[in-house]
Length: 347
Image: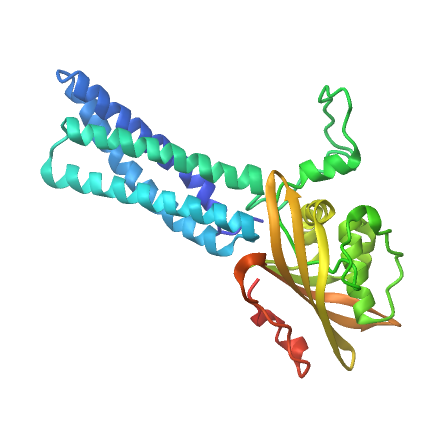
């Protein structure tokens, strides 16, 4: 079911903003060229007025999306750039609206301002589309083009596409997480790590390592074995509140990302209290993913519950910072009561 109010409204109302304001700018241009046609200016005024109302709604829902949609470091930078362009463009349109309302003038200078603002609006819209198609922001379900009764296309590539390539292309989220790599501080890549067995490992740290390896190797069955059905995953201000939601959302993109970059475990701490345990891992992630250079320090906290002789992950919190930040933005949780404090860590 759709939320009555949610970030998905932003891409809905933005189409009205784009259409109305660009059309109004063109109508003002027509009215300026053909001064004997007053009807063009009348239509332009009404179109501009409705467009400004749509603009205000778009900005409001845009801020809602900015603070709620899950994202990583690279996509956050792109999202902030889109937001800044949108705010500057909106300010210009609002200024032009005040000019038109107060001065009743729509001369050549006003028309030039409208055309300029329309060009800025087009650039802003392009940057917004880039967030979805390049980084996958706001995408909660990714089609499985190779896994089932799906829709098959022959792309006509002479070399064809492997399943690994298909996973990388379909998971266009750019979503990156801290994963453990090799615990001995060796650099690990997907090709060097074998798939985990489906049995739950005996220690909390072994469970964390198995989870990391399953993501790197793209072993969905192992990930499903290690995660609780009601697992809560927090990242970038967003949340996935079940295993099914994660599997249909960011899991494939996480696998694609971690399989493409190199990882090095910098530190790992763990603690246990009764049938609960936590593992905090700091990892260096470097490489190139989707034509973007990656250099991140990733912080991961896993909370686990005992199940039989092993552990199952019930909560995950991921956060990232640039490697050159010069200081750690996160710290591992303290052992006393740490299993209750993970939601306080920024991701």
